Length: 121
Image (cartoon, rainbow, N blue to C red; front, top):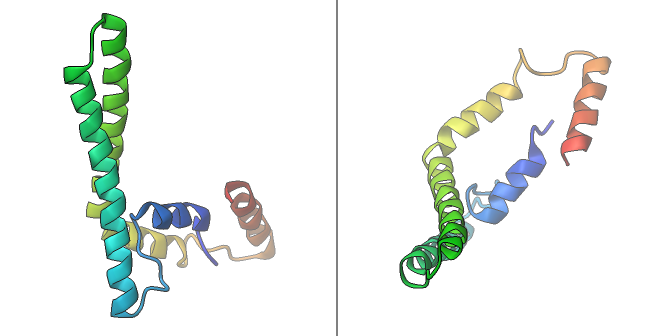
């Protein structure tokens, strides 16, 4: 059973989680390069938003809009850093969700789990 598989697929695409198919060092290195590229794009966007707040603002309305975009991009950078720092804890948490106390034990629980997985995915 896979818990939260669509969410982990999104994290893999965003460069925050290495897929299980990256077993060889060559694939691992390519994924690390991809993740680094994605993070550099995100941080360069954040820096450009900061420079937009400093340089291009002429009115209070422009300041409000530019600052809002800068805060949103800064928070996304912080969230990705938190994900990367806590990736081991997330792995442990996912394994615990697939073990005995949380694992579905009868057919009714399995159908409930499948319906929620379908709603998420």
